[in-house]
Amino acid sequence: MGNVNVKDGLDSVGLSNLSLGNAALGGGRAAASAQRAANWKATGIIALRDAHLKSIPEAVFDAGAAARTVDGSNNKIVEIPEAIGRLTSLQRLVLPGNRIERLPASIGSLASLKALQLENNRLTELPNEIGSLSRLERLTLASNQLQHLPDSIGKLTALVILDISSNCLSSLPSTLGSCSALQELSLQANRLAGLPPSIVDLSDLRTLALDNNRLTDLPAKLLVKCQRLHTATLRGNAVTIEQFEQMDGYADYEERRKTKVDKRIAANVMLNDQSLDIGIDRT
Image 1 (cartoon, rainbow, N blue to C red):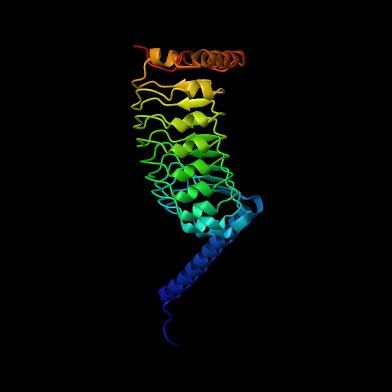
Image 2 (cartoon, rainbow, N blue to C red):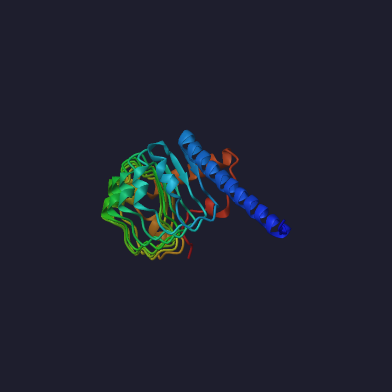
């Protein structure tokens, strides 16, 4: 009878068990991925925030029309692929705190989108297709590298909140005045030397933040035509408080501003010093 190599036998058993273990582990991961995809389709919510992702998983796009919300905040995602257009019922696309440099043209296919949040990325421009988002109500693009906005921005007639603060904008398109539902416009920390005259057509505008730009004046009829405007901030510009107080419509604006402050005080809302002044540097 030949000698039996016990060590070889044990090694064979060990490798066999390792293979079985790896297979089980792989099967477990596959099952977990399948369950996750099933949950996405069942709930419509795709939650991927703080997941150390460098790209959006392909399984996200397989959710198709079932997806309502995609939240991939605070990852390392560098691009949104064209496949995003397959999420035809998507209402919220939330991707702040990533490394995204551009938006695909297919973004315009998201006809149901209501909120697009892309602050703290690396965007330098927006595609013209952004104007196809006819139901968009919130667009937040703060802390990117945008140098201009497309004229198609004026097609966003459902837009209520637009935040493009802390970018590199030196001008705004005249079409911005066509965003007729706009209530909050944040433009602080850009390079704006002027505002388009059409901004006075934003008749529902309530808040206008213009701090830290290069403005020397404002459209003459701003306070007259924007009759719901109650908060305008202009710190860090060359517009003087005397200029602002001499604008047509200032008295009515100041009354609205004070009423807003009084309501916040009555509601026990914490106010800081800037909430109590008129929002312009005093010389």
